[in-house]
Image (cartoon, rainbow, N blue to C red):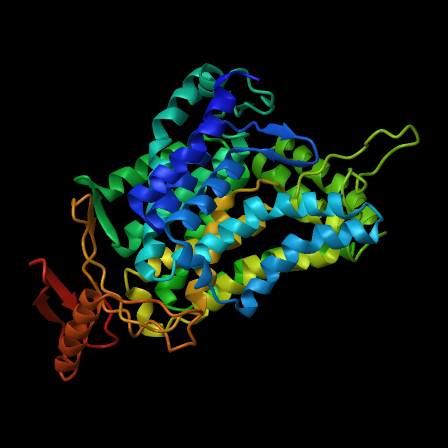
Length: 514
């Protein structure tokens, strides 16, 4: 291991503390996770009997320590909700699996910790800090900016091959599939090109939502459409077929949902992983038809790769069904071995990994966590609220979680930022209706859409925990409410001037902002 790897990983703990102290709150958490994911080494430091110390571990532990030292009351303000039960069960399944297989409490506890660090704690941070539309918009901006920052790195590696990791941290262990479609596929500081492709897809999808809704018009004076165009082109050059298909599908769902002002298109994304898991576990289809379609659309090489995945998946599902409830536990006991004890399968999909290791309980809790909260969040929007600029980032992140579950059907890329987003969506899905006024950034970094009143976004729901609201926010909300009430008898669109002096338009039918 190169010397810079442990220096970067161990040194990241105080850096996370500094970031959290500087930004204080949700922006510090979002910045810490995005920076760590994009620039820290993908390798880890092994510890006997414990999870490896990785960039995810360092960021999660650093964030937890920062919260405990700087804002300890935030943790005690947490209120458990039934939607949190899915994540709790998912993280505790390794313990039940270890006990049922006679592997001991230490093995089960180690595997529980291995799930809490990348899944449970980021989810908790999202529940604690991202409790409003503007905070969720900041999280979306962080992901989008992370994609923009990666553009020059990706373009250089497309031309020169994946070299940034070698130049910075030393030789990379995994260089498989770096050459694709007659050119290099970038990796930068992530683990694989597939991981990079999914990240750029996530950033592009959020960029499309921000541009299409007008939530952001410029960044540092540069029109968003130019930045989005560069990001989409770079995503295409990443040469990740699956990620590109998810981007096209996600963009279609996003635009269709806003056009019809209803979450029906998102329900299609919800049903895909449910139907796939049901069909594969029940052995109703071997995937041969999908392989033929892939061969006609993308060529024999991609079709062969997909067929190889399906064949291995079939063997692993058969093995998992021998211990269906809590799985086989750790030590690779879920693998299919030959008579010589050699592994004959390659595991790709995250769903089949958890199904084999920790059983159907773990699989259902994973699907429940990532599918139920986004569905409820989008369903709460009233029909007239889909034109609000605040809806777009929330819708994009909810859709991103659904696309991540679809990607997990064939790949196993654990990213704590998705767990952070899930916690944010779960909070917002059951949050009470409140008046939210988004003020422009002080440094005018973003040319944001006009401030809007979000009281009509959805009906009231019980609060997960009491959230203090400042006097300034209440005053601004009351002023906005009084203005809305004074305009209810107008039939035509009215022009008004906000506190920042900008001209704004508010249609009288539904209160949607253009």
